[in-house]
Image (cartoon, rainbow, N blue to C red; front, side, top):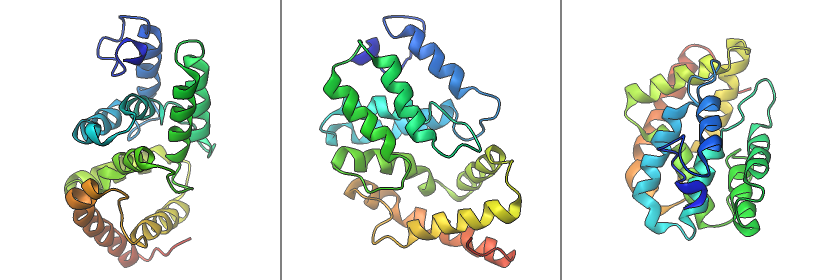
Length: 207
């Protein structure tokens, strides 16, 4: 397994110990509330359930670990910065073909372009699977995202959220893969519709 155990469960051990320690420090940054190690843990739990569907599970697992490694605002290019950070720390440690695959996977988590293959679809679904959590947990995640984006006024933040969530709801399928469609699609759609109605009742519109 790359980096002597990609999960970093023994952060101080093995060839990847220093990298793992740095990742833990990044995910513990004080300005993070949602994109923390808890988010990574949750994504890994989802990954465990679809690992056997991955063509390259090592790459997907690495992409999960690195997809939010850089989280700076108001900079809006964190996925690319995270992908570049991965290339920096993996240089000379991993095969070039694997590094390219992981780089591309991290980039696609910006949700601006469609996934190019099934592994990318699984990664995107893993990243969005929290939308399909129970309502109270969904709300808690929303509060944490709002805290991270405290530099925006409500009049900026909520219209942006409405636009993003409406785009997700506008898809033929919220999730790209059959497993996530079966297990999380209905709840995710119900959560977003309920949340968008709440925002509309408060007078917010898409921006």
